[in-house]
Amino acid sequence: MEIYVGTLSTWSIRALICLKLANIKYQVHLIDLNSPNKAFYLKKNPYTGLVPFLIDEDIFVYDSLSIFEYVQELKGCLLPLSIKDKAIARSLCAEMHSGFFNLRKSCPYTLEKKDTINISEELDIEIQRINQIFESAQKPFMFNQPSAVDAFYSVLAFRLLSYGIKLSDKATIYQNHLLNWHIFKEAQEEINQL
Image (cartoon, rainbow, N blue to C red):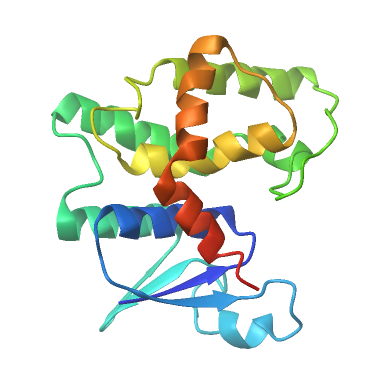
């Protein structure tokens, strides 16, 4: 199995965490998204020209949400066991995947600590929603075992830290666990090797 990921790509980190959680052996191809040669590598994804994308023999999977679902089909280990919790987990992953636009715009992913930002009303609404999600974690993970939800929200936990955005004490417990989670750290390092 091969996975193509990009430097400083939050979606690439999420896909790598899913592969690591499933104990899937993979070969990683790191694309420097700041390189003028990136177009050559991104052409390997004929559909969107974006990372991450995964090649498993004759199967081509692109987009982190699809990669998570593909790995779930293969290994069945990225979602909690109960139907109710699976529905919640899928909803949370989809919300992360399609939401939080103001946070992404105001707080681009960075490895550097930034000064505290101006929090608009729109951004504050998103932060309050994140706080609510993080407070709902069963701890140390969202559910009893690590899941795709933790893969998807670990990057968000790091983004909040980078910009000095504070959550409630209860939400911070889950955030800190994600920040110290060895699988998140390994995936983050893997895309920052250049």
